[in-house]
Image (cartoon, rainbow, N blue to C red):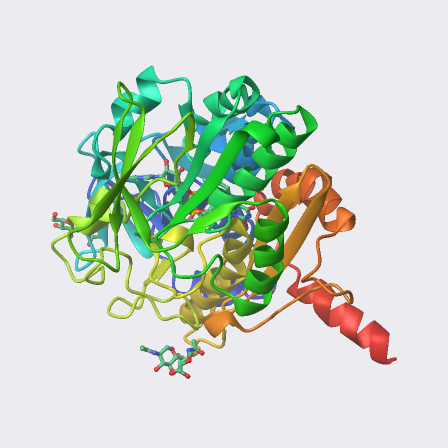
Length: 438
Ligand SMILES: Cc1cc2nc3c(=O)[nH]c(=O)nc-3n(C[C@H](O)[C@H](O)[C@H](O)COP(=O)(O)OP(=O)(O)OC[C@H]3O[C@@H](n4cnc5c(N)ncnc54)[C@H](O)[C@@H]3O)c2cc1C
Ligand SMILES: *[C@@H]1O[C@H](CO)[C@@H](O)[C@H](O)[C@H]1NC(C)=O
Ligand SMILES: *[C@@H]1O[C@H](CO)[C@@H](O)[C@H](O)[C@H]1NC(C)=O
Ligand SMILES: *[C@@H]1O[C@H](CO)[C@@H](O)[C@H](O)[C@H]1NC(C)=O
């Protein structure tokens, strides 16, 4: 066992066991399930603070995606490759990577089983499995996405490549954009692509011949009243038909129809012909969590954690981060940023035998792109509290926020977030406020 002469390391060392193997089983101080946005960030951070060989990430995909870029890919502003990097190029040396899925959790024995049957034990487990697309919940959707060039979704690593060609080849008629009746990541994404498509069609003379519809399961355009008010102006300006409380149940790509449940009229449905269809697909907790027999998850299958410190409600040595948790805030990469710090702080405090000190405010953010030049940067926390970073009216459509989204945020992601050194803008907000009063 090696002990680094840095502050805190000696405290951590007295809690460490032998980390190579235990009874033939690999053992890690910190084991991270999932190597997406949250898993990679917290894995890199834990590796830096605990040293080489003490931390592992379990991730079946060879590729890592910066999903927030998919809105720009769908609008033809970025190439699909720009949203992807290979896991092996992102994982820092000294952070072990298992190219496997987690098949089973055994939180009572501090074990996980991988899809290849191998078991790994841990002192601390971080669950970062994301949210799963549930395409089969909409009858005919999988076929339609495969067979019909006019049906697309920015939510899928492959189908996102269809979006821009579908926008380009649209020659008028009904353009339908849907928002599902399930939990969702980046709740703004289903409408951002609509605003971009509208702008594209306007520039290319197709707008006059088109009927753009937003079919959403929600009863409002957006969950936070301040930004909903701004977005309603955008919807009106662009002549978009806003149909609330609709949930897509089936797509028939032969007849080119989409059928919706009317959520406020039990048993009633409506069927609409489409010439273009962008689907905000139904989503659910990952299978491995939903199907787990242990009390790891809540009734919906999401990891049951304490919203202030990301610690599991029943297993104190388990933490959750990102979309797979039941933290009641909008599921975004922006929310993962402060959670990365909270999770690592919590693990360090537990290792030192201290009570947990973090108090997450629910910070999350959604850059609501409204055309090829403008964006409303929504930033909020629990219960819709406004947590804005910039000393300007953020409810307005701004070019600066568009450039932030298009050029700055990808840099922050690849250079800071994946390395576990980005905590979100809270630090900057604090400095800025000091600057303003001093
Ligand atoms: C179209 C779109 C637009 C978006 N726009 C924005 C935006 O503008 N701003 C923003 O902040 N966020 C945005 N997001 C949301 C953001 O991408 C997610 O909230 C963020 O990636 C969540 O991180 P995560 O680690 O929880 O999940 P993910 O990054 O999805 O990672 C989950 C990982 O778990 C892995 N996994 C799954 N099952 C298993 C298993 N059994 N074993 C091991 N590993 C497994 C997966 O392969 C995946 O790598 C957008 C998302 C989409 C789809
Ligand atoms: C892992 O699980 C096995 C049983 O499946 C158990 O014997 C073993 O003690 C567990 N390992 C740890 C470190 O708890
Ligand atoms: C969450 O953690 C805080 C701080 O440790 C604690 O006071 C609170 O009771 C916890 N909440 C739940 C639901 O366990
Ligand atoms: C949100 O508001 C409700 C009702 O006022 C309150 O009970 C709850 O504690 C709040 N949640 C958070 C996380 O602040």
